Length: 135
Image 1 (cartoon, rainbow, N blue to C red):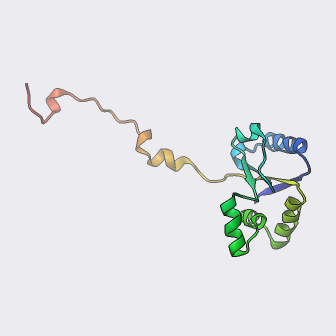
Image 2: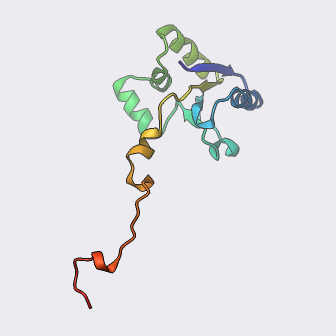
Image 3: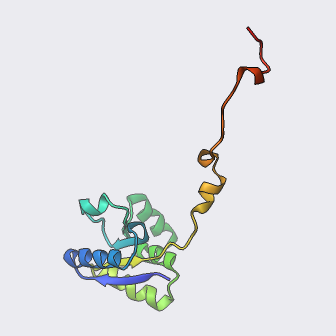
């Protein structure tokens, strides 16, 4: 289950991210949710997911048509209870940031096991084994 930390400002945001890294979380296991797009170049250059609930113009228009708000759409990804969603939704609307740490427990071994690019094959070829024309 995801660990969610509510953060008041950007300096506290960096402290929480560094704390999560020291706890053993990889950057790819961290996400920062905010109401608007974060303009923090060092986070954009990392593997930390930056999610703005306001979304793009087309996201806002589609949500308007179906009656869904951006905060709820983002928070439902993390299997939270309705009360937790409402609480964190209000945090986002109040201008706070959510730092989400979610361990990746999936195995990535299947790529190496089933990808021909990782196989070592002896491709030594001798002319005597060729079925083509001989010169």
